[in-house]
Image (cartoon, rainbow, N blue to C red; front, side, top):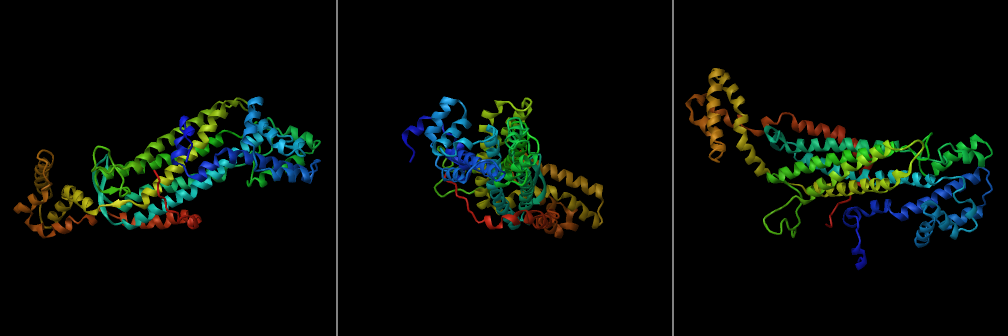
Length: 481
């Protein structure tokens, strides 16, 4: 249980209330500073292998203390030095006195700072991708189950031609599949900053290796591979290009837009009582209205999605003001915008998975809504049937138009049900097609190829995207809050 003093200062709800343990750890101080130490070890190992006077004893000493960080000492050092990297160099050197002379040898602060950021971005994507796969899998199951269940389609949020519940879910899925590809591309496009020196020229390392360009290039390659990257950026300033941050946050912002759209649709459908998100047995929808079942999960997703969409503007503005080889005004901003983007995307996906695992459909309500609108939509079918039976199209059209307006007045002015069908049946003019009315008003004849589109989409577009994550999709999400 948190101590009482922890409630006396601001805590980010992204960590204290929402985000998963693995994503919170990915951007934690422990992950950050142990990664710094690993990078110093990688650098020392590569420098030793390439001929610099570094001993096995120094490497063993560094590896032995890679994890035991004295955070209090580091904080005290930073208060004195006003430099976070040098504070941790001194803290590491304190527990590695033998290795102290070669820690951070030839490097600049961005060697540990930027390379660690890139590792965190990569690892953040590796956390998000399986979670997105889970959401797609759950929603694909939903789309398949309801592929042929007719429902009212809406354009301009007005009743339009019928679609199916599964086809509508496929529209959501299509956007998520695009997000999946975008996240994978952004993750795969990430490179390591590597070993580049203070302004990216590698001058310090060229000096260490007495002008041997091949060894400097090999040093960069070795450290890049030790860090788990296939490539490093061939040119950098003091930092890697901040357009990399734009690429990473852009795909997350795009994911946020997708989730906002999906969850808004669910909220609209919940108002229609056609579809509901999961609702716990003892959950309270309103403190004043006991009957309410608020779509709080979808609302949470929309709320956080707006934050996620907004964060990309930080990256855009930061990249635009990088003076020459680098300016420090990116630092404080990136400490917030990079972690928050991944933390926000993380909880959005967890919440959306929970929603898609328990979506409730009410077919009888959907059917009632169809019955209220379908007679209007079937008028063209009735006209065509009358023409086939020998009727005059223009005359039939006028009959239908008058009856439709009368029925619309009952609905809009009197608050009654749509009685167009009753009016058609009562008019002797339509006697030739009365025995066809049930067939003409079958909702499944109005959904076109929606079921076939769902089946093909799931097979050709969704299944291949999920294949790499099959072993990671058995996690069920239960929200604590």
